[in-house]
Length: 241
Image (cartoon, rainbow, N blue to C red; front, side, top):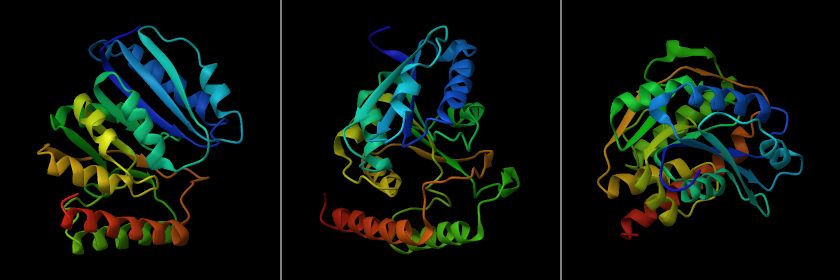
């Protein structure tokens, strides 16, 4: 399968050998049954894992009309770096970013597609009744506080920028991949800021979501890093970069 595809799914993964088989089976099975999305690809970006993440992804079963590709980063650089590598390598007319834990079910892509936006952002904040299992209080407080900080900095009007479920128009995805610089969890902020600067239409779409244990996010440490990176984005915008 070569050339332009209808759909790409980018799955950044770090030490996900245990969760990845079920995730790939669910995504691959869904795509194979969705004629309008075929031909399609799943791109797993192994962000310098120390376990068998890449091997598990390479051993994924075959799905009609769907190819699974694996990109290996030489060292652990961060979720932003993994997403950027996946977007750059994508060939789909539409590109979905999905977390390896499928906290947002793959089926929710239908809501993002229906928005018709160049960049559709899955949101846990617009309809909180769609949250099947809430995240721990510390993470919830961090998320709300971070969003307030982003609003104060003039970086977003969205209520939830950090849900790991986003759909981009393909050429926009690859253009953003070439411009983005942040490697950490705040890459979403840079993506949204650069997309808005590029004149892309952005929609925030409520999606179903469930907290999954063994998250890579550490509220205090990553919260400080994300705020620092948000300030960097704000500075870049002021400087016209």
